[in-house]
Image (cartoon, rainbow, N blue to C red; front, side, top):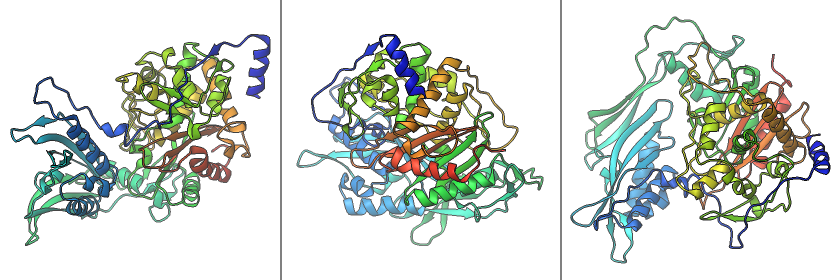
Length: 543
């Protein structure tokens, strides 16, 4: 057992002690997504007397964060006409099948009449079609009580939305080619409902995917007055041959069954892939719609500690047996805490990893450079490079922290670190094999990535630490499975109001898996049972 070996080593040689500072103030959650990531982009600060009131800027930021997060009542309350705003925001996103808006503000300015104007870019993912991108702006006015509110008008939602014109989504049915798994077994939305967004993307990549358009229509007559966006392309060069994927129908069915039975109706996503070559065996999105498993952007939470640990081990900054204190709280510009404000005094770094101690990892932030996490992520794990997996994918983002508070958050997979199940399954595969393989869902894809192999000593320690997380730590939900299973759980906080997202990554044999459950609270309790159900239903290693 890895833990015994570390304890034995500690008796022979005094352990290095690395302690983190503590704070006694009340806990404040590490926030990524709404309150922390709700920054959504920088507001440039000027130096003139006409600089926008920070309160107005904050209100604009909060409005966009609420709208993007689907919190329409909260967004509407930030406007001068809440009832009307709520109805319009809801009908706009629902009527156009917009899955998860991304709203990025630009520099705020002050107009001559004192209104604060905040331009923003809207990226609206239209389910199964593509992303509609446009620019608009928010006007904010100071109210009699001194508060700032968004001065409501239809045109702030989109410049061409008005009392006389609205938008309509027009879809076009297209005959698609047959899509099969790696063994030639046909895959369909009827048999695999949680695979539908992937099947649509695969067909689209072959020139036979869904097509549609956002049309501008007259409210009175219903006549089309213009087209704002067109999605899909005319099918060209189709051979009539099936599209053969790397998916495995057995694994796909088991993944979908696990999501249906264990996700408890929450949005969840899962990816399983081969460690030796990156071939994807299963992709699940529950419910079907947006391909959050491959294109989603989530804070990975404590599953990111695999990358942080790699950065520390690469430079021998800490060893598993070193004492790295795990206090309840740690203040770095703001106060961070552990899940359920737990603490582990005189814990070893191994214990910090297996118990997922945030404060211990944050306490080690000075051991890595400000850009080092991003460099390690790109150099060894391929994160942030352009992947060509066969369908559109988000390949991760690890920007350099803007301050020490953000650096502290990055150490534990929060702040502006973004990932998804595809990326974290790949991180797991790289960590336990040492070699990055670009994930693929179809054959013959271009690979432009350039990475360096992890040293074997780092791989060995990562495997030991992930195994200990299953046998003694937060991933005990997997402990009774056959095979040598290793894992890492994660809890990613989203907003101060919403429950946390739950994560787990795991490996067994030649398979790496990552799963996220939105509003799952903790990884072990929400994502853990899904992965356990999947691994219990499939062979210990695929053929």
